[in-house]
Length: 245
Image (cartoon, rainbow, N blue to C red; front, side):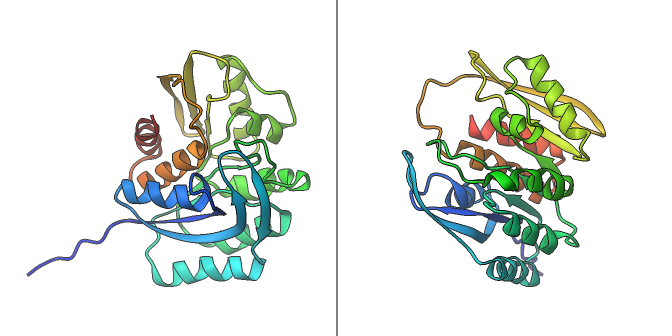
């Protein structure tokens, strides 16, 4: 008797990047490279490349809800990655649609594209922090995003970065991966902080490259891929860190 083996499945809820380097496109590429079947719910269409975001068209909230429900109604989703959610109605819709889904969630609080263009409205920052973040298995902010969530200045040294991660945990978030790529250091340090485990420090030499568009999307998608494979959070984060490097 032959037993069929199906790949694990992950769902990305994010914006589409016409340049293919970030967003939905980057997520699906990471899922595929790591042996995970990728499904998607598109929250916005962007005209975008590595240099600029020139147009954004938000998906109607009823269509976002329908996409997520359609995936869950037919596929055995093992993990969800959330990326670009540009407005309060979209954030609230995604939160309500996932509220009763028993699945690990990786939340990448996308705020600004590598080009410097805003991808999250100013009035939506509190909604990400207060409504969606407490639902996540892990929050993956870069240093500017963590500072904006806390309404403070960006952490530059490891001690301050860890303190900001601990402040995010105090807001009801279960785990935070503080990504250190924006620090001005020769070594890039990511810190995984969790309520039920000690800190995990992941370091790598800084690469001398300008090709960083979409790295945050790829990292969070890779973590979701690991969780879809039933890895522990620390193992999924470690594997994703190694893959991105």
